[in-house]
Length: 361
Image (cartoon, one colour):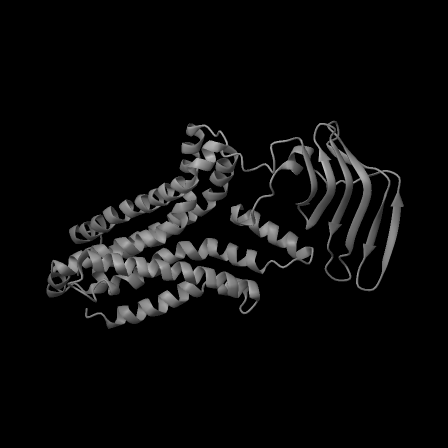
């Protein structure tokens, strides 16, 4: 019985780790180069300082690493085991009474660590993405002090619609606030007013003459007012100029709150539920993909580097295609969103276990 953490484990883990770190850094850097080549002229035309452009790509690294880490685990597993196989080290281990399953144990341990790392990276992405957007000036709808004919998605399932926003005057013209209801106990509310003025003292909007229309499936009523303050309209004029946050840029807990708010208002949250589940499913893919890649790497001993690259790239492309299929299935309601997100992992796990049982140990 080989001692856990002995020389063999350290050797296998070290060889796997070298390839993993190379690809975990190399793949995101490659994506940065491709993206920068495509967008650099646009950044320069907007007079963004080169230092800000460079720093924005530093903040972009976690986002590119989130999907790259499972691919890095796959590359490291296929290349390390492929090398052991071609150099007859797998055969030597078996001859010494060490099974293939025991031989790849350090690799599976590394894949578990990679899963944990990917979970952390996934929670960092919204933070670094917000900073990147600020550096590139993409958090604003425009550079002026006015915005016309717009809608703004707020919390609690509320939507603000206005004819015009003037930051210099802290005013909104022809404001309408909508909150869609859901059932007889959660009414739909629509507030229409000729305008609203923001006070920097109490941080509230004071609405001028208007009406509030409240309705559900069986009844409705109107309330007229000369002046009113909406206590839940906490966004100031600069906030209404800002581009609303993409749900994909929210952390897990924030996305959960967003989903609850949307569902309370009667909105369709299926796609967001898939996105949330993928925040867990993609990191777990690191372990699943190692189980899949380990036996696959032993199937062709003479393939060399070209075989390893081909297998890794084909598997990565297939995985990314399945992710998009997952989103479509979950959004369409064919399967429950939280189940649909795990389809890629389930497929790779089944195939991986079949391949693993067929390996001669």
